[in-house]
Amino acid sequence: MSPGRRWRDRPRFDTRAVHGGNASPLEACSGSPLSLPIVQSSTYSFDSPEEMVEVLSGARAGYIYSRYDNPTIHAVEEKLAALEGGDRALLFSSGLAAIHAALWSRSRDGGRLIAGRDLYGGTISLMEQLLPRLGIAISRIDLADPAAVEREIRGGACAIFLETPTNPLLRIVDGPGVARVARDAGIPVIVDNTFATPVLQNPLEWGAELVLHSATKYLGGHSDLTLGVAVGSDATIARLEHVRRTLGGSADPFAGWLLNRGLATLPIRVRRQSETAARLAAMLESEPTVSKVHYPGLASHPGHAIARRQMNGFGGMLSFELRGGLDAAMEFLRGLCCVRIATSLGGVESVASHPVTSSHRMVDPESRKAAGITDGLIRLSAGLEDPEDLIDDLRSALRRTQPASK
Image (cartoon, rainbow, N blue to C red; front, side, top):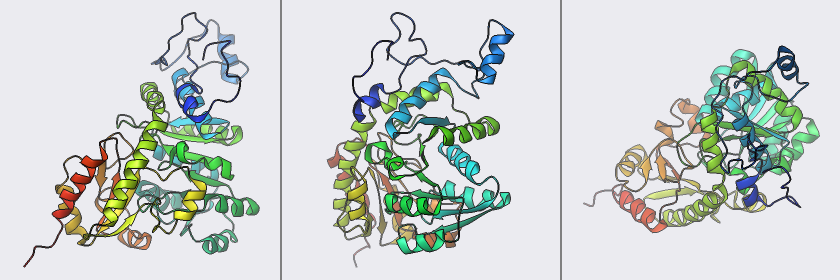
């Protein structure tokens, strides 16, 4: 926003998605660009060594090196902070880089991390294969069970990490409830908000210390960038900023520009995708070859009541289990036409994946079984196609999974 043009009151969410934090690096000029400029520079020059020293020391605002900060990235971070309601946001090269930095910043001296049992496969791999080498113990429990949470918290922890809805089973965790119990015990809560987005819920309002996203997914929304984001207080983000500088998981300016463009349509996309997902879930629940549908918008979902309280909609993600197991899942995927087979989610295209052979393929089979991830599970991300075309496509693919009549 150009100098002198300020909102009289705090703008509403949809307006923040278009304008929030979108200050142009060239805004001091007359006729500054309406679209956020891409500052594709790795380093920045100074008129004197004294000026450079002042910027390096923090005594003067400015940019040094794009691994540290970049004007385009900084503008997008301001918008993301405005959308999640945090003091600051920090962009990373991927969602997993953001998760790594968040967990490292909280558990770098060892300790114990409490995490959900049902999580993204890459997060599980990080927790089970890398963090223990740093002396960090991992306790993965059913965070949807309040009694289990209270029992586990009594032993102390460096942090609690959760997803809600979870990936890929769309379980609902009582976010405000977990945050309340954790706060009483002095344990910070970190929430991966990728599935819900800030359109549907804002975990910082529950008392979470940090909110994370794979911005590759809904925030970008067009399957053309790879980024992650963390949002929190000034003090929390300062810790993560040190980790980002040191480990080098910084964001690229062009990817940041793409993200800024995607954020402008985020509210419209998520609401439409949520409506479509609800229709698809209702249809799938009536299909004889489907044994179970996981979608918090269904009255049959065990977390439906909690989701209604803490979310402003139920999201564009769902999953369902086919009675025929692995063979049925493969046959179903072969039969898709409009819905694409892909490992990601949250784009304008509807995509289906088979978690056992994609997102959770590196997870130990026993861990998958404990989490409830079956061989017949299909994860579906609803896009922006006509819902009737998607229903026709799913029904056509489901017919391929029916047992042959004798």
